[in-house]
Image (tube, rainbow, N blue to C red; front, side):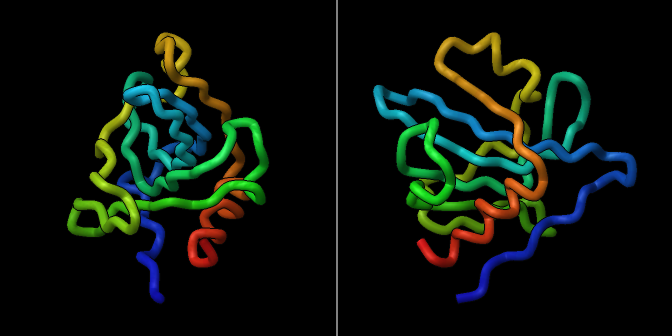
Length: 122
């Protein structure tokens, strides 16, 4: 199976951010691992995201990847296993502390890529 390639940042000075987000949506715990492009101090552009099943505090090796999305060159998301596309613009990870039902932790680019590489074997 082929997978969409990683999108290229839109600006040459764009800062890439990687984050693991655990949240409760309609009484269900969801964990996302995302690659974001910083727009400004308030917002980021979603580039790639994995949806994981498993406890939020476990390592990637114990997670089942239930879906993923990647932003295409056309500006829409290519989805696999996700019910709906992610929001194209999301709050900056520095703001997640103001949301009661979200726990976020930063990742390195290498950690994100390790998660991303697991999507074909799930």
